[in-house]
Image: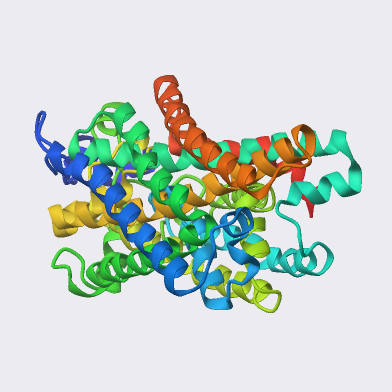
Length: 475
């Protein structure tokens, strides 16, 4: 640091002497989008997807000959083919954190962050394809992975792993709502707690109507929108933006930003983010040799083994697939999913640094790097596209979590310990009650975490500690 000061001179030792961060929020109480737009997005998209997906389910029932039984509701008839299985895996694995936290680690660590995020969360899905084959061969009539635990190890282990499974579903749901509510609040001014509570309602409605098949049909549509927005932002950053526009400009700006002095405490609080990156070779954003990036990669790998292997929604997708399609869907889905966090983070995440967007560490940890960069690059339309992309991720993964919790409560609690002679109608009715209850619980949990002051980034790093211990026995 002293050498840096000697080079720049005593009067040029502050980051503010070299550049001014580009603001992205509105001034004063103004927000990028009006509050009405926030309610319109949260409630309007929910209503649209409820109607759209319910219509698809109705058409499938009327013209496809599908009858809504408890088995159909919870397993989609065990007849889903490769393409739909792959799109569902991509959609389920695209959390709010996939879009927001990946860009945060790019903002912190440079190019190593997106790689470790994407690679560290792809291998679990690829390896799960092996388990998908095994479950179709050895337990073709199973509904949950906890039924396998009960059959092999008995009641005590069944209850222990049930706790792991519920903790996994709660953590994933919390991350969805914490990230989604933080972005909606920052861009539109909608109350953080109210947004956390309202977002699940759109998920609840169409999941109640069509069960797992509705989740699959919606996921295909959601994935298409996520990729369309992703391609647009990659094109903007590396081809069309007058602020950046090509890889060479991004490289030069990232090289320049690390040559500035590190910000003071006051400057950090004001949104300055420059200087050499601690732990990176040469202090550069453009190196894979990053100590902190590697540590994040290890945490990411361990934590995401837990959130795949302990999440009933992934087992449910394997159970729902045709025997010849299950492993193919996971292999294809894992490979395709890699592009989402990697491409988004290496475009918007690095763009936020290259442009000097005004962001504090707390804002980045809350998941505001992508919307901030998008607004600076393309204005309000960028904010709308990020919220749209984020809502697609929340809806698809949220509905999968609702069905997962419903299946566990119905088959591993009610059917196993309370009523072993339950009829199909009883199971179907209870499944819908549980989806409604868990959807409300998701909102309450997110409000509690908001009140405590826990952010998306904290929960993401914490998840491996809670559920990582169940991975090896389950596998």
